[in-house]
Image (cartoon, rainbow, N blue to C red; front, side, top):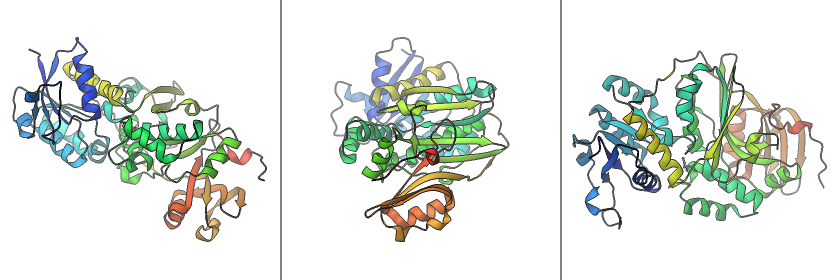
Length: 404
Ligand code: HSE
């Protein structure tokens, strides 16, 4: 009989990953005692059908269950389960990034009020132990930037587009079949999922809460053959980057595709792998790479949280740094189908402009506000890819090329 009894909500990709990692790991004094699922008719063999229940209360009202693991899809239902569990004094592990990102201040307050821990390593970058490291190791660092590839599905699709010349739809289908994508894959390819993760990372890296709706996100769904050709002709790749940069008391935040050159560690991160680059005053740049999606890698992150709870681990939630969220001017490549739809006068420092018969593009600096206006108006007829203008990434304006 184990000391720690787990009530598990959800038995999808990550739930099965947790089950497998837990049942093949002999070191942990924990066992799954009940699994709450929605569908009564699914065959769950070889797991005994008695383990499966269909009412949340059977876990919430069971005093023998001391750890709740929440791995369902629906963020609002997940929030209800998590809050009820914390209020009942049950320690909780979740991998629901949307739910955590949208409710983090309330979740922090509940943990304090009920003196009950909530851990969510599996919510951010799959198997990469980023939250744990930010909470413990980097608590002594003054972080200036956290950025990277925070979404496995988008990175998988971009890899297939660049390396294998697969179509976008084929690559997305494969990402879904492999269990990487969300049930609604717009969350992945639209840059929402990495935005939720970035919002959680900001809390642990900088001690401030930024609601995800305040972060600009643009995904990979409008990437065209021209954008890919543009990159390939210059030995660049396109990666969906999430980043939070603190400079002089100001924090700029962004989720968007970026052109990346081969000197950048992100260039070499392929398929469902994620990468987190942490820059700080003392240690400077450090890189963490690992599988960002998939049943067993994410199951392991959840298992690691369960193991931590058995050792009474909790997050510290660092003191808030004095930072104001602001929007910078950014250098971007903006591709458009119809120049009539795009007001190019809002660009500053234009370094290149091309207008062809079927498409055109401009490279220059623009505010996020103006960029949002252009993208909203052009709809599917435009795409934006950022360049950082910093030494670690490419400055497109310095490139010379000839367009036939
Ligand atoms: N859909 C997510 C991804 C799963 O592709 O990264 C892991 O959070």
